[in-house]
Length: 125
Length: 168
Image 1 (cartoon, rainbow over the protein chains, first blue to last red):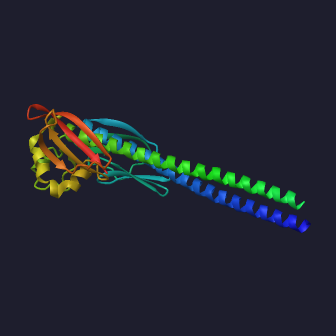
Image 2: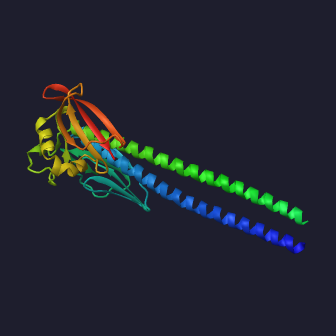
Image 3: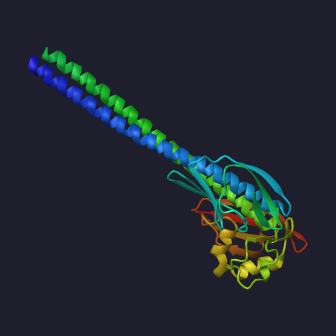
């Protein structure tokens, strides 16, 4: 009788450990997803904020200036290619389109930037 | 004793099964919500990009301003595309140039308008939308989710509509 109870107890404990391991694995997976999503969302926010500012300055015409604050963090790189603002953060890569290919900067650091439309050329300083 | 043990085990297994079920339902709901959020976010981005593209078309002359005089629209010398003489006033020569080069320059024009991730088309139509003066690009079939914008413009001295369709 005693041995039977122990065997049953072991089975229950094994099942509990198995369930715990499964939940733990799912939890870790969700946590990694959450961190990647956070990187992706923040990269997207920063890329779209800069592209919207550049597009606004372009659409508003010659002489327009815009005081833009880039809130990117140290582990994020924001660069400008011919057609888009690209933000890299962790494994996340986000592209936000720009309307004018004539932008004088290839990489944009954090902090305050003045974006200016100088006769159709976009200057970021 | 054996019976007591058995009942306890069945209770435990039933409890674990219920917890697992609840967890499973929670994960499915979570994933479903994430997919819905992604879809609505993608659509919002498409709307924003469409508005910027339409603004570029009807609000700017392009860069350089006489880009229509270039032989090939795909040249790297053209930084931006715009169809306007002044705000909301379309220039027929610019539209003609785009329409004439539709086959060869569609991809490049998409990129210049910030629509590289989508397909798009636009039409210049009369106010009643019964007649089309010019048409450029590709238009969505009924099955595709699309963003449709109608912008009032002046075309050859008369009010007209620039209809823009952006789709995936």
